[in-house]
Length: 236
Image 1 (tube, rainbow, N blue to C red):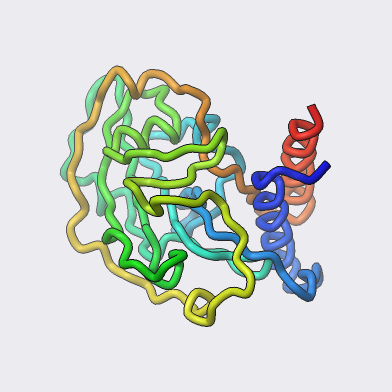
Image 2: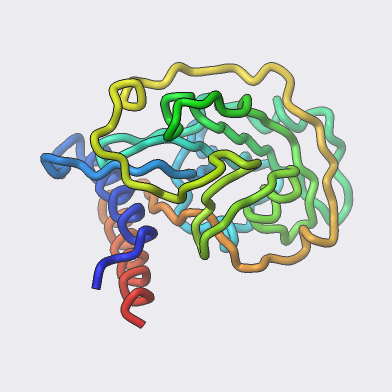
C-alpha cells in the first residue's frame, strides 16, 4: 500500500535534517521529491527549528515564539519563516495576566514563486498571542485569527492560502521556487490579546508533523518512529 502524503512529507523532512546535521554525509536521492506545504517551527536559541511534534501536541511555554511557513521544499532544503523576531520584540507591549501565557506568532505565507500559480500571497504577519496556560500550538494559531483549511492532520491552508491543494508534489521544481530566500523584516507586529473558550480545547487537528533534533541519533529515532506511525495508520 502506498504511504500517505503525510508520511512522504515527513520522510522528506527527516532526510533533510539528517543531511544538514552530518554535513552532507547522508546523501539525498539523485531526484529529490519536493512538496508544496506549510511547515511548523519554533524559535530555539535565536533560530527557527522544525517542530518535533504537531501543533496539537505542543504546549508552548510563556515567552516562546511559534512560526509557520508556506513554501516548496525537498530533502535538500528547509524553508523557515523569513523573519525571526524575538519574543521581546513581539510581546513587550503585552502585559502578562494570571492564568495565561504570551506566545509570539509568525505566519509567513511565502513568495509568489512558492505558490502553484504565481499569485501574490498575503503579507507575512507577526503578533503576540495571549492564551490560557495550557493552550497548544494549534490553539495559538487559531487565537491569532488564522482561518485553517485542514485535511486530517495536515494544515493545508492558512487564511485561504493556498486556496487549494495540500502537500502536493512538485516536479520539476521551478527555478524561482528553488532560489534562495531573502530575509524580510516585519516592521510592526499586530498586537493581540486573544483569549477565547476555543483556545481551551484542541480538536486534535494538528499541522504537518515534521521531525527536528539537535543530534543525528535523536533526529533519526524521532523521525523513524513518526514515519512508522504514518505508515501503520495507512495499513489500518
